[in-house]
Amino acid sequence: MTDTVIEVENLVKEFGSGRHASRVLDEVGFTVNRGETVGLVGESGSGKSTTARCILRLIEPTSGVIRFEGEDVLSFGRRKTKEYRARAQMVFQDPYSSLDPRMCVEDIIAEGIQIHRPKEKRAKVRDEIAELLELVGLRPDHLPRRPAAFSGGERQRIGIARALAVRPSLLICDEPVASLDVSIQAQILNLFVDLKSRLGLTMIYIAHDLATVRHLCDRIVVMQGGKIKEIGSREQIYGAPHDPYTIALMQAVPEPDPMLARERSAQRRLAAATAAKSGAAT
Amino acid sequence: MTTAITDGAQPQTSDTAAALLKVEDLTISFQSPSGLVHAVNGLDLTVTPRERVAIVGESGSGKSVTAQALLGLLPTATISGRIEFDGRDVLTMPAAELRALRGAEMSYVFQDPLSSLDPVRTIGDQVCQPLRIRGVGRKEAKARALDMLGAVGIPNPDRRYGDYAHQFSGGMRQRVMIAMALIAQPRLVIADEPTTALDVRVQAKIVDLLYALTEERGVAVVFITHDLGVVAGFADRVMVMYAGRVMESCATEELYYRSINPYTLGLLQSLPRVTGAIPEKLATIGGRPPSPSDLPSGCAFHPRCRYAKDICATEAPALLTPPNGTHPSACHFAGLLAEEPGVLR
Image (cartoon, rainbow over all chains, first blue to last red; front, top):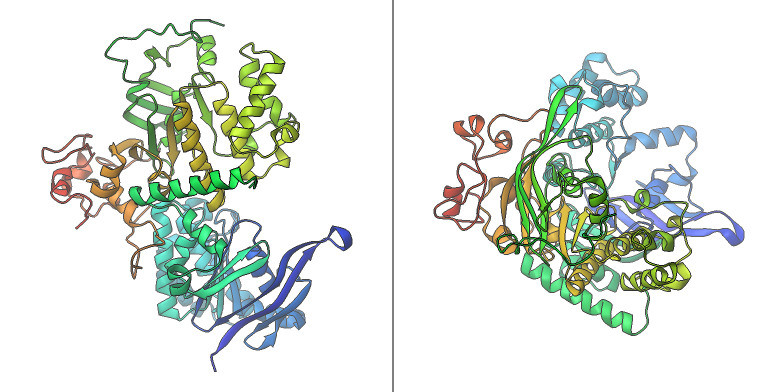
């Protein structure tokens, strides 16, 4: 039997109620095995971030089941939820708004350890933080500085160190490279690949494009409008995608080979012209 | 308003006839509390009619500032050099002439359509405006605006005409912005990261739309972006900027297949792709782009460059074509790279 970390079944989330209810997650289900990285891919409104928030219980789903290492997450009381927060952590999209501007790096990283392991010796915490810094590629002299002194990529490294500090068994990353410069995106993606092999991390990686996901994820879940369109291994999704939506997403990825890019653009324009003629409005 | 702008009497000599936009030695700096900040340093750019040029750079490269300077949108900056549109100097032009130029001959598509559209005026009203302020009658302006909204792919333009910006999705808002930019039939559109805030499928559609419309109408485009992937299928020519300087400038194929600049090559190799072999690790450029207020000495890229030698820290390389090369690159070792273009050893 494979070791399953997360099991999501029939997850439904509705905002509003009665006639005005809008269903943003519709019967979503997938699993994440230990050591595996699963990509949740979709455009805005696809429900990918809502799914992540439900898994971490940052919002309450309307119905459905979420199991973490076999335990029913939605039945957790206060104490169990707090414990759960140490085992499942999140790296947020925006490295500017997700770090407290008044705290120094050391306090930001130490906060989680102090909350979840209050009896830990100070020297031990220091050592752990030094290790984490090295792991995410920051220097010890960064510790007394505040977030404002760092670039977007470095802030994202701080966010990753903060998440790892409590030794989670699951890391959820919500578009962690979307707001970074191109040359920095690759650095952070490589850091995730590195962490994966060094720590055997289990990850859910959320992205709006299929290109970054390909470098990191073992399996991919494609979502649209709150529904899962396709789940497959990396080889299957990129080698032989079968859902039309997956194919459309794939064709829209910016292609840096000019000849290929022109071909694709011509194909898209032709498809759009045909659709316009048949009266379909997009 | 001067009438000489809108009629066909343009001063043309055989020398400038080929260039629609000619920028020479453009230098832009800003006064800041910590001293003078050099945002752009000695930039040359020529755009011919109907040409599509992409300017690619990361944050702080000076790409957006350059775009804004072209339309005279930087009143507080210190600008030197020349910006000529159709033989007329944009930098020394009287304000009235500049206003007449904007929209009618050279227009701008902003990055964020929500904050660039007026939230309390209808879309139709705003699309009409470039025509109305040029004295086109209300009825005719509306008819042309409806045509234009249809052309940019807004379904049922007559029903959406009276709607407000918040009633449109991000992609539709960007279509409205493109309609506004094209309605007065300019000869040059400057699009500043027009797709950055959009989903991938919408992004592809907007780039395709811009391509089709400008092709049909014979409009030249300067497309500003941080992503080399977005413009590969769009641009005829690409200019890569770093820390306020042009690093490499050439035809699109040349750049993507035969680059001779370490920064361009680094950018290209660090792009994640959906095709081809999956590398164990993406090639990266170490460090981070410098702040314009604190530029490294010599070649601004040298602290991040794997080729850097002593000379790079002391002397800024000029944008020159090496003897064995086919296009200019600002690198002391462009000649070495030209032995095997497109490959970083």
